[in-house]
Image 1 (cartoon, rainbow, N blue to C red):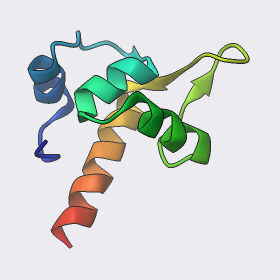
Image 2: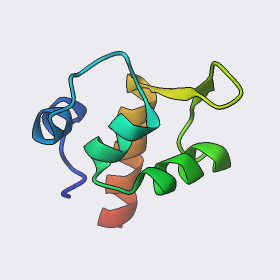
Image 3: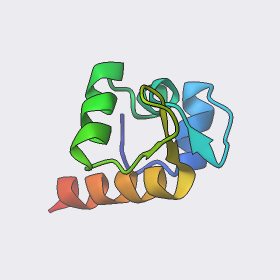
Length: 77
């Protein structure tokens, strides 16, 4: 996936509605990554997540957009 996509373009490409927050599964679809990889990124703190139960968390749209921008700038360097 070209990481330079904007969040809205990535959501459209993945068929995920653009919301203010996303589940790990939705993030995985947007980033074209396995669910386990996204959960690992969330656990490590590299992808900020808000936990709302012991097993469930979501990623804010602003945090996902910032993550995509950081990934793109790291790839470009």
